[in-house]
Amino acid sequence: MRNLILFLALSFIISACNNQKTMQKKDAPDEKLIESQNQSDNQEEQLPEPNIHPTKYSVQEQLHPNLADSVSIRLQRTACFGRCPIYVLTIYDGGYVEYLGEKWTDVEGKAYCQIDQKSITEIQNKAAEIGFFELNNNYDNEYITDLPSTITTLRNNDEFKTVVNRYEGPKKLKELEDYIDAVFQNIDWKKIESED
Image 1 (cartoon, rainbow, N blue to C red):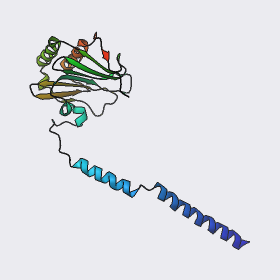
Image 2 (image 1 turned 30 degrees about the vertical axis):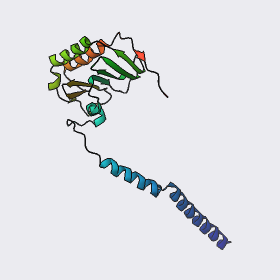
Image 3 (image 1 turned 90 degrees about the horizontal axis):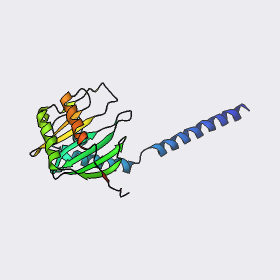
């Protein structure tokens, strides 16, 4: 009887070890997949670095390396933990305006409108008045969370200037951001139907 119990216990342990090895093999990543990912990682590393102003934000957050030459002004408001409006407003030289409202905005989705050159000039004059192109690139505090960012980009001749305002930016910058919003407060946006 004692040998039978010992035999069963030993069989149980061996069986459990085999199951453990099988499960580890199933959970192990596919070597071909890893090799493929390593190759794509190497390709990404070979891309040239963009010529951008040094800040702690990524290229996507800085925006201007990806903007068309015809972009004149861009205002983006980002998310917070609450109901902060999330949208991007892009004004082109000819007065064409693209809008993407993601959440907590009056207009959600893609839309467009046309504004006159006078409105663009007024925004540019307001920016010059506050010394926009002399402002710091970044107003932030990494230890403060749950605040949205307002990212304002303007073009001066052939150069873009982007200012990220998340924490304690100057009052005059906030006034410019609000001024740009006010221009579009009563605009009749035309919705762009999604191609999905």
